[in-house]
Image 1 (cartoon, rainbow, N blue to C red):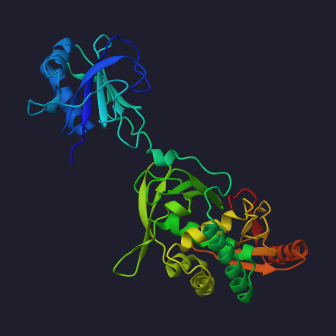
Image 2: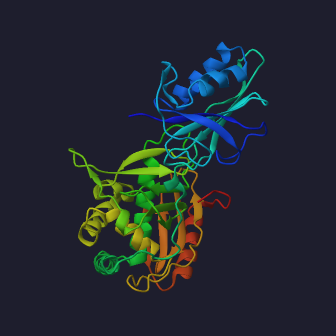
Length: 391
């Protein structure tokens, strides 16, 4: 498949523009290998071959092929498509020479970009590249910049019905397991985020603070949910892709961070609930009975989002109050625990938060009194509060 590009020259010299449309230029079409490591490298080689004589380079690569190129590298001309500041829709990259400034600017014009400049190089007197890079950075894809709906826009009657049904089943099954709906959401938030963090992300990714799921047909708008310290943007119902099943039973989703790094994550219910330790089987069973569809993960996101953005037409989950901070305690022998108010009582976290801790919910109407009593008991046993440790 070709990667078409454009080769042009500014009509006047000036500073490098932010967008391919910002200054006047003329140019020609180039059909094959238009990416920076193809056509871009060939243009650098031409400047070096002409010992930095940019007017001669422009004459050869633009004026000598007014109808365009099939391949500059192979000196093959063609009857190409129109290319201009207002017509870059047939290109993936556009390369513009500024003869006076001795510079070559590179712009991303492919379907996931909007003409942003993604690189620039300048040339020494002998034609060698003296500064810059052809591809300093790729602009983030359009879908990474899609807007976030502040409510539940785009929901059909069927979508509302599904959310209501999920909320009812979760409340039923969580109650049988001795949990509240909010307690279930809290435990699953821990399990889901731990699964995302444990994935093998590309080098240089992180810290993970904003994660994104791409939709089946390209996302026009996201829904957003906060899972603990992590923001997750995910597609609305009409754009959701089913989980990808593997022969070994895995159910995969592709997860992205805001820098464009991506990783495939196995989100089988039994795998995601592993960080919950002894509670894993109970939570996995709730997921199987209350969120049975192939899109169970999105259904969980919707349920959690309903505690942050009221879903008055469907999900009758009480809005979660702002979370109380964890109080963290260490013992000289290495034991660690933390406690905070949450759900309809308080929550205990046993173990290091980076090493699959156990989360326990304790429903009670006297949470503050019980928390104080438990802290006093543990302090007398040698535990010391860590007020400056991130929870």
